[in-house]
Length: 389
Image (cartoon, rainbow, N blue to C red; front, side, top):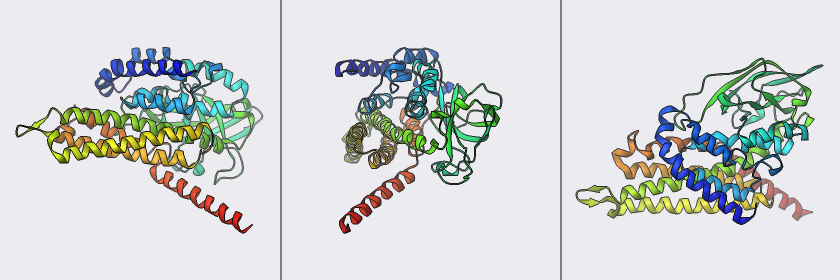
């Protein structure tokens, strides 16, 4: 996709978000679902496959292009992006990066068109940000593999047609070794999806527990046809996803600032527009400065991802800063709105709840800090060893 084509796509999505999705936010919140007309339009625009390869029906966006799109998608109800996020992101990327040719041909065209929804089934009750605690097992049989285990907080599970299931295939029961990943069709006997979780925010985006009760899959369900590559597949998908989540946070921060500025410029107290109060101005200024810094980080991290100069520290630093940043911006927005900011009918109250999740998934803020510190110390150790050599 050349620059002009991408600009046209981005403009079309921005127009669609502002004219169709934003006005539907109250409906999404009330009914806990995306209207079918919006889903169909998103599929026609290619949003279910923007990050999937063109040869399978996707748009094949680079990371630098993807974050620009994500900042637009982030301006509205997170459920809109979540509807097609796993197809493009953590689930779809497992197939793109590790799938066999046959697996790609079987699933990717359906994901790109929106005909099918993929879910990333990694998290378990005892294995959240640290997947080394995975207990789900896949036992080799003459017929293929039998998978047994439980997954938790699986995005789009109630709508999923296929799960990327991470399970242990080796003798090792701890650590990151011996973890494999399988494409498991949702309609197979033994696959049971629990009721949708009742969450703090992000209504319209559904998560649920998924149970695998001795589910038999063919041997060709093993992604890549190789055992033991599951942890690497998960980490590669999550690294890309962290930059994407950071970009969504920047988009939501921009929307929150717009809502805050509009309110501060029109609401009066004692006959004075509250935007004239210096402490209100300070909150607006702090939010804008932090948004601007986050936007710069996202753009830089995406460029480093594309040229492969940094796929370790930059994604984690960017995700850490931007997700924490949008929480602060949302908090200031509620403060600027005052009592109205605490009311359910106010946009900023809703976004305040929505924003909180960004600090948790794709690795919590604490996990990002651990990754950053370990990479810095590892690099310092390498420099020392190089110096003594």
